[in-house]
Length: 536
Image (cartoon, rainbow, N blue to C red; front, side, top):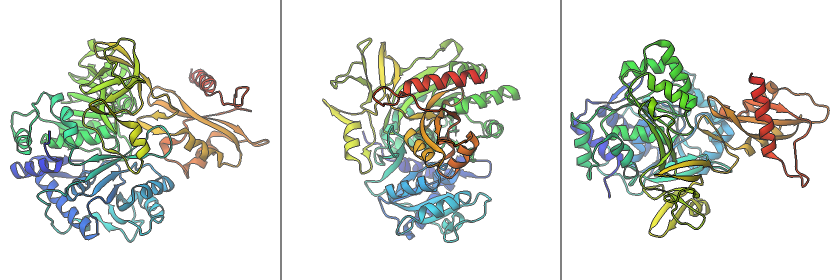
């Protein structure tokens, strides 16, 4: 089935209902007409800077309206938007700019110093568009966003074929990899979450999608993403909200301010929240309880990236009549499964396979109907094309089995029956902290650059709010004396904040087997017990 692109539907809504609110924040309000007009002006600037179909345009910013405008502009002219984590420091950012071949960066002035250092590694350096966020300008050569959109433009009636959205995923080993979504099939891949989940029949044409979006009978959707747009669930939910003619409400801040979020929920009438599990849900529900004002018109909470506890879900349900969906998805495709609760009586919620999801055993056979079977979660619906310049990883993850093409990121599950599964994990060392993936090897390397660190190992330990906390066990060099703050100061210059260990423990030596292999499981058990005892 071919429905068209997001941009086709957005332009159709602009023609049919230009005054409908599209994107709002505390400081900006864009109707669909203004959203399209600003995207057209920015697209003109991109083309004047030499941006051509297939070129990477990096969106290195926290959530703000201009992010969605820039993404709209890129998709409309066939350029490839590349969202990158605004927490990256210069070395991390520079590595990914080189990896994706960035031709342009869109970033806030507050990150200008990082951009200046990172972009200097590229030859030729990328064009720069700077967003005003009250910080001093750090890159004189950058074009200010208001100047970039000063001249009106016109979006092409049909975007060039072959456009892509390039989303970096943490994966499990090595440097993040860019997942390539074909812009021609991106909307098609999210029809279930756009329409079916909200009880709307799926349209078959752009005209049908526009008619649904502007129909007064279509339920109003006002989504407030509280996870960064680098996360697929936050980004795709926002794009799909705009396909439905809804409103995306943006908490335009690099940090979560739960009091401001509550104000936005009530002032803008949010109906849907997108959170990164416990890291966002727990402080939000606590603030809502303490304020006594609840969650207003919110009727659904989507969570992905990490789980929410049943206790937090119970507290959310007591605040109003809402549905909570814990989604198990991947940047490469899905969703694979979801745990849905519509009230306290539905708890504990269990994971159930979604349509087009499967469990594949070692033989490549579907076993989701075999109770007790073990296998990898797979998805045979619309999925990404593969990874940027990594054919081996693409073949490993995107598999042709029988008559289907599956995406198999590597998560193991046990079949419980009636569609229910138990997630067993990926069997890798990656640490998932607040929805962010952290590679222990990267943190260990940074730790070992400290002159007083003799040995170090990094892993995740249980954390009430973040799911897992990055934890380091360090062996000081002989005669050296270091403390956790010294380690934190050392890592400040090398790693994004979420990668830094929340817990640092010291040992005289690291436990190893008689063959010299690190006994990671033992270290994790001991560290978890020590931290639990210290917390009492």
